[in-house]
Length: 571
Image (cartoon, rainbow, N blue to C red; front, side):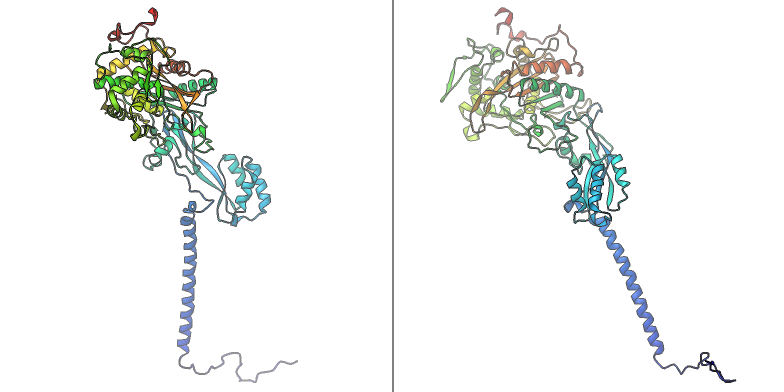
């Protein structure tokens, strides 16, 4: 077909076509269209900015608040170290890894991925791993506190839905040592028991996280105390044990043990289980004849006892339907020192009767016996006393020799420190007292009452029921206490006892109090056979650490007791 030709001189219709005249309003329409396009562009821009902002909000705010949602934990925060009085680390932090799943971002086969992760983390149950991968939320932890090599293996899986987070973890280098005192943290780094719980705010204070919290505890003394308690507890097949070592001038708790214990790095149990009960500060017990020195000191301080030669009948004492008798029966009457040496229930009850409830309760209150156990940790037991409306004559008498009143071993240690240190009550503390700082206190007993009490405590060891506690050269003094365990429904077991020895050393210048308690021993039943030898062994081990060297040429002044008792050599 031939192309159409254009006549010469005619214009090409495709070029230079003369358009008709522009109508009025065309410019306005074009301008409006441009404005619309600009508005749409601006709107799309702001929508994009809004989407980005919402995503940032989701990542920074909602993820940060994720602990409020199931399956997401707050990132842990750094914690200050906890050290003993000599700088030995008891708790420290390090950076660990946590493996987490973001289920919505997983691209691979979840069942296959779960099997591969289980091979890397064999300690984690496969079903827990699978549950995390199939979780409906945005975030789920798979495992916390994993090793660096495990973290690297997970990273090499190349799965975008698996993330690794760094977090601060807590480690306790000494395992179970001082478990109930140091305490532990939760998986999210919050203090859950002991010092970790009591000082949680201090340990996480950003301004002080590089400053260790220094305890009064001496790790060497703690280890010796726990070792001796554990040995006797195992030998006796006992239910539990507790012990306290305290500086009598400052109230510093140099050691506090509760057995059985647990590995702080893997607490893994419930606070109600036996291993988690702090028997030294939370458990309350009738500690028997360890109370008798308090009653004698109260009687001397209040004027009931005016002379050490004052005598008390020790034949059976009937109160209502009950008769009070002595376990170690000897012919009386007893002088005041003999009341302690021979551990007379009857004579102590008579002293308490003369003193009366009002004075007895007032002294117990000054000794801190009516309050919760002293010290900064929060696991503290409250004394069980006779009901206020039933604290009659029989209760006054039985409380006088340590029955009908239940206290913690720490209560007892603090009260003994008051008795032997010159009569000043200073509350127990688990924190180190700076060298040379005076610790204020409240006077409970006069210096003379304290001095005489120290002499009688020494005689109770050299002449009385505490002979197996004697540590030659260290001039120890103290008192045994054997009490029947109460039945849950009322009354007492006849063949289950709490055995205790509370004492101090060296008695010529008391520096340290030691309390030993063995709960329900089976081979022997009396404190003289069970708790006293443990006290002796502990003193032998800790005295050199504390700078107390044996010296068999020294003894406290016992001249005030001459002629008031019959020495064992002449019996």
